Image (cartoon, rainbow, N blue to C red; front, side, top):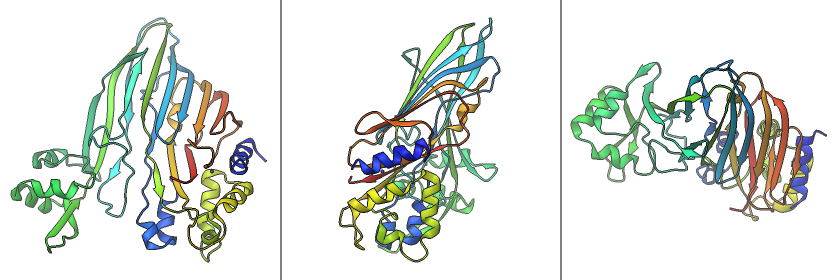
Length: 345
């Protein structure tokens, strides 16, 4: 058994982007409606340069916060200026069935992203666009008074608050699409565009020197009020492909299922009140630097000892009742990281 699966097994026996869509298709409707989709957020991205190497990266992921500490080295004897970017995931607002797990209330910085360089907080420029396919519709959305990232329970209120003329113009342009009716029979509309958001700045790397970058943001947790991996659900007809997807995405060993069954039992109803949380992290951007990441340190903390956690990674070991770590040298990320948590919330 690989080290990554051994860590999963220990987590299971010690008490845990994937399948919110699969859950919606296979679980009872009430449970499916309580699912939200995790956003696959990643780290800071730089203009690719052969002059700047990533010497160290420490990535710490908890259900509340993602923190990344980098040390970059300018290998030349001249200053190097690079464009630094932190892209947030695109939000397809036209998909009215998707419930994105948005951790913050700010329609621009909706993950509460913060960065320090050499210990000092810095500001980024914000580039936010509304797009429909290849067409940029930012100007039309802004002219209406609506935010680009039109999210949250008050989205309908914001649409109703703009002028009738502005609303009609958006409908005629195909930027607002039908979204059912209100309790009083009034036609409702939702956004048809995709919101893109990125924080950018120019960063100078002094000659022959290191630059330390720390950034943190609130974790986007995909959530389900039950789990399709409970024995009563995973053994149901037609659930095989869903379970195999979970196995592949999160490297679930058989011991994980034994640990889950011990907690959840085999009853049809979720008497143990277990819930799923899912975290996705875009790790492959770490392959943009000059050479591999020389020293990579991953820490995943599940938050509570009685939760089950599983993820795909090599050389994982348990370092506390809730935390697991992996240390790799000359690491070139080949795939992104997906983390599954099951427990009481």
